[in-house]
Image 1 (spheres, one colour):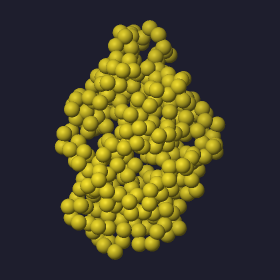
Image 2 (tube, one colour):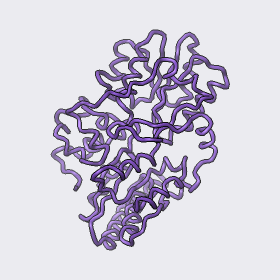
Image 3 (spheres, rainbow, N blue to C red):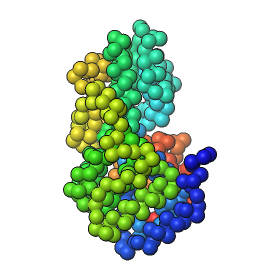
Image 4 (tube, rainbow, N blue to C red):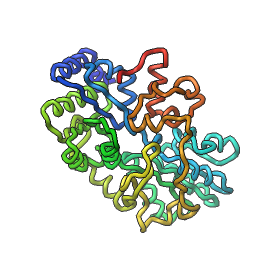
Length: 368
């Protein structure tokens, strides 16, 4: 495919790895906060190309994975009601709640439908005027504009049988929370390029300055990631801490103004709970007062935020970058994609799913 192979060229990758090795004089620990980058790192062995002194650890880069159990439980509760159609993306079906998941609910007779965009859920609402149609709105800033547009359009049409269960989260507050955790060992970040296409990267600049960490907005192909690592290490070696934009072919500093306008009209910043990380102030989006009537929590009751992960699942530690997936005792044995204990093994962007697909327990693992 044109413009893809160029970013996967083996010789160029080795050149970047050699350049990183030449400038590295001491150990550094970097974190990517994007599930797509995690899969690329594991699939292409990017971490294994790097000098021993460079450690890549995986953060909470999967929006499905950080959706709290309490929201899954609420979605299950809503789906079980009569004359309700719950619409969601396919990777939400097997995300475990306290006792069950949406796939099992559908097998029991709940009307749970997979859609490919929130606007498709609007179509379902138009076609089923006697049913309440609820869209489970999950994601980082990347999905927020489309989710906001669905609510905006529903209000414009007066579509009274449509609502959204909102679990939108924001990346910069999560990075702050990681840096402020006791025992934090992250010294630099690879920021998610697709998030920054929407938001730009101005909000990352005070984080880099206040915490003294370089942040490099990075794409998703092997050469993108290796260049992001090179830029991050170069800053660390030079004692610098600023935001750089490796993904300049898609990202501009101010981001996408039109997308931000619809987000700001429909949503407001709220506290949000993250699976594996707990409550993070100002880290989520909720419907603004003008659109509150389209909030599923207004119609069906508020989410109970007290549900916890299973004690035998260490996905929380994986999401915080404290352990690699293959360091969990259940990985690959009691926890597999067919019988997952945790969401990081379920989601297409989950770190555990990446390790299971590309690095089975007997097939080696990434370095610490």
